Amino acid sequence: MTQHVSDIMTSAPATVEPQTSVTAVARIMRDQDLGAVLVTDSDELRGLVTDRDLVVRSLAEGGDPEQITVAAACSDDLVTVTPEDDLDHAIALMREHAVRRIPVVEHGHAVGIVSLGDTAMERDPGSALGDISVARPNT
Image (cartoon, rainbow, N blue to C red; front, top):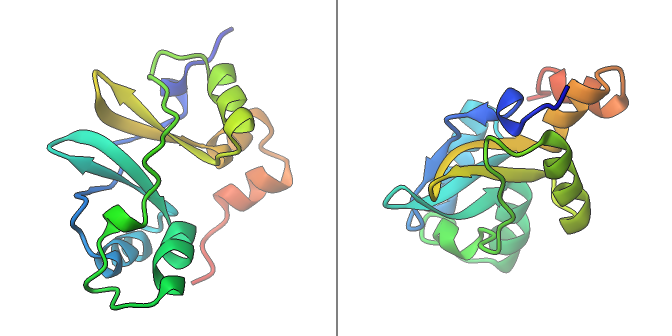
């Protein structure tokens, strides 16, 4: 039976606008236990920012994280899928583009996100990645 992205994606992902400060995004990630947030402008997907992006593209460069916007830290060359896409297709895109998360879009609007952890939990829940993906955060 074919599985679709919609079967395992996280619906209603956290979103921020491009002018949101890096500090504000970091707080959202902390408070909601997220590793990625979508960047949208007028409800249109513009990018994706991960916790690693915040460190490598913002904090490591210096400057005031209250003044640096997420637009400077996010990836804007995105690979996306639709909810109706086969899960195998999403996994193949993750491999091909070496990404861990893919935004799910419908008619140009972000409706979800699918992660490597989601796929591991679905396909191989006993794997190390599956175990790590369901573990409580160590905060």
